[in-house]
Image 1 (cartoon, one colour):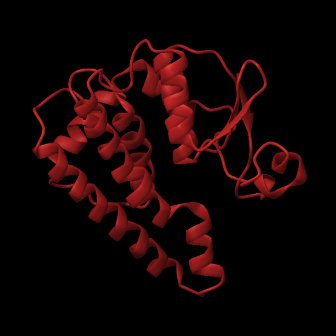
Image 2: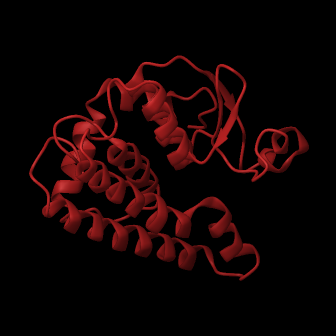
Length: 213
């Protein structure tokens, strides 16, 4: 498999975590978003949406969107599972994952932040305030959802799931912008547990070949 991704992209990070948790080998193909490589013709041939990540399967099929890619990996390589076996459990985990992927991340990804500063002329400090507000607001809701669930090592139970694949990149990016994580007890306990897991350590930005320290 080939993974087209950017070391700092949280959506790419999600897929790297899933690949590491599954123990799947892949070729790392960097696409530098800040330099605009995702808009070049070469990458448009891979991803019509010009977004990362994109996964090329062993038989040459191209897949886009991190959540779809992770579920594909979970269906084609079911061990260890990233979703619970029961329908209710799967719905719970998907809801946690989507709270991050659909409610927090879209407001704070690179193209949105660039639009704020370039087109709307928002100053850097105000842009960073925007970022911190929506990450904190979303993670407070995430914490409230976790509080309704039985206690476990990770977001759901004692093994990593799709929810953890989404949580860790969001916290990583939040730390870059000095988001306040105080009071998010269950959320940060799950994050800390993930970061003790070798798969999450291997997938993090600092371990990527295109990392810019």
